[in-house]
Length: 343
Image (cartoon, rainbow, N blue to C red; front, side, top):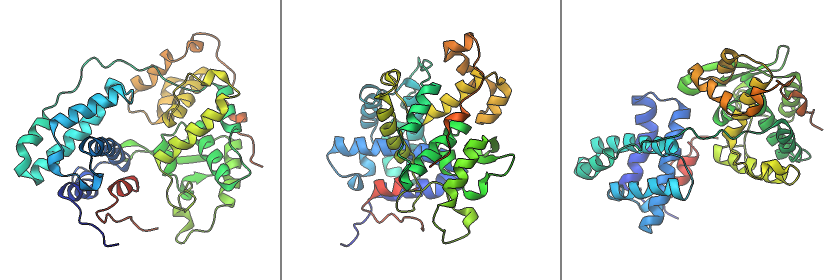
């Protein structure tokens, strides 16, 4: 089948993500992906609203009226808070300004998009996290008799241990992991900041067994990603969200307290932060552990759990981690969503 010709919008999206954001703006890969997530949601909404495939959308479909409908959709249908809504709008503003410089014939309509205001009244959203028994239930719900199950167990155990953002964990390569004493992992965070995070001996033993059974890589083994999908391609944040949702649903059958919680990959990071606070770790250490830009971000966890106002627990949860028993995808004008997801 002959590839279809990309629309103007499709071509500009490729330039925006491949040239403008990383090269001209100098944004980190994680920040680029956050822009990708926002625009991917907008494209999916616009496709349904315009009743055309995403690959057939044009710059003229990128209107202020449609963006307003999309923002309302985020709050009403997806249940997003004001902060998330404003973050999505921020990414849309940046893309609209980029389009205005590239496609001046649409300047009038794009200026209307750029002029859409942020919503006031953003309130602090309650932090969703898992308690120790819930963490253990999630881990125990993973079938480690399969290679993919052992991958999932190693991934979530590492995220629980380090409090890594999901993309930080997915970006870990073999060279980033030190399994000899003292075991640690190097994480690449926001703004290209690098931090070292300690891992428990149980986690190190788990990762060693997982790495030993990984297939040989084509290039330098030290550069190979730790967590890939069944086809050997990088695991995505969308994939992790799906996996976690499945394991949480299974765990909730045994632990009823999980049924009313809205758990997502970032909840694992919240779980680590709260557990560290409960174990008596000071705020400055936790802030550096999680890679927070300021101490105020860490302080919000104090309000997250009433147990922090009571007696601190003795340990975090290391014993929950029991020992375990190709080239860039090119956009061809047809699968714009696939291209965005593989960035």
